Length: 212
Ligand SMILES: Nc1ncnc2c1ncn2[C@@H]1O[C@H](COP(=O)(O)OP(=O)(O)OP(=O)(O)O)[C@@H](O)[C@H]1O
Image 1: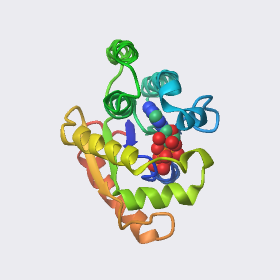
Image 2 (image 1 turned 135 degrees about the horizontal axis):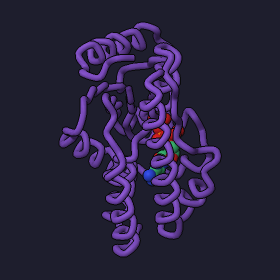
Image 3 (image 1 turned 180 degrees about the horizontal axis):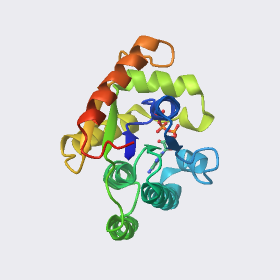
Image 4 (image 1 turned 180 degrees about the vertical axis):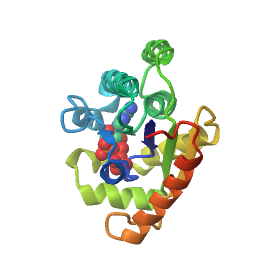
């Protein structure tokens, strides 16, 4: 089974993916951050590095999809993914294009590549969306204190949030669980984590592909 966590920068996907992997014994696939050769440069000069970064993420997410398919083929374990390939195109690349940061021809090339890849990608069995407002995202970004993320503007975060809501509002290719994390703290409050587990358990129990 393939579970994925989706949500804006600082929503808490990485932490939750780790906790769920530990709880359920799932394999976890994280996003490339520390070993990402473009991320810091991108936040410093978005127009210069937007296309390079999107190609890097697309390739790394496609490699993850191949791993997901391999695991599904083995049939032994489930896998949880920290962010999906859909978000790269529908949210991040689209946002850069709409902002005028990525040129028309770069976006066109990117979309063609993405559409080609889509023929080989299948959606997760369960998508978990972590919904968070700007103040919550901002607090978490400050808390983890990655120097290159401190310059992220409210405009950038806000327009990503709008695209996330649009993406989730029209998401129909698989099962979807929406968790509002604004008032939750699942690292510090066991009851909050237990409530998330209860909701995921309920969803997996009715999922047609829930053989773990
Ligand atoms: N396609 C993309 N385009 C631009 N930036 C991206 C893209 N995918 C990921 N990123 C950025 O890469 C970094 C990933 O960091 P990380 O894995 O910690 O996740 P995150 O998005 O901050 O979420 P969370 O706090 O929920 O784990 C963030 O700065 C994120 O915005």
